[in-house]
Length: 225
Image (cartoon, rainbow, N blue to C red; front, side, top):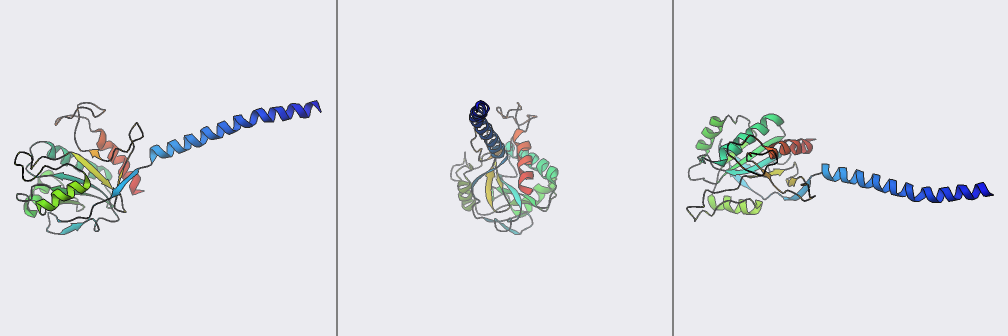
């Protein structure tokens, strides 16, 4: 009788320990999945623009591909060459026909399809899945607003060609996706810039660090699986 009581007491003690252990295991698995998963920001805005080959390119045409979206212009002397360089590196690293890039010019008066074709050739952008696109400036400004990526007001001469260095990541179903930061918050967009520090705190045109470039490569590969 005494042994039965002792066994029962041990069982009562073991039960909460087992429950706590299982709880920690579940939390651990959930946290691991959380960190590896990508957040869905929103549906990509509808767009239709003309690329460097004179072909119409729309968000519907891009369905079935993982792709990046940036805003730039070909004669930009500052951040655009850096962004294009990082995009080229990503394109070469991914090397998958199910991956593409849409680079949207905010200077359509200058950036005709022929100018964009020459620009693509100049920077060595040879992939048929990298679309340098142009269109009506009001349309492009409105599209940038829908993406929530900054592009300067075309009516303001000092601001009209200013733009953000942020990049949008789109999955095969046309959803904007992103990872979570160290505080479990979605980053929303990725930086196409270079930095003086590996943490990505100090931007620099000649910086040797590209933390978001590596993150993008990792996240693109997740979405391609």
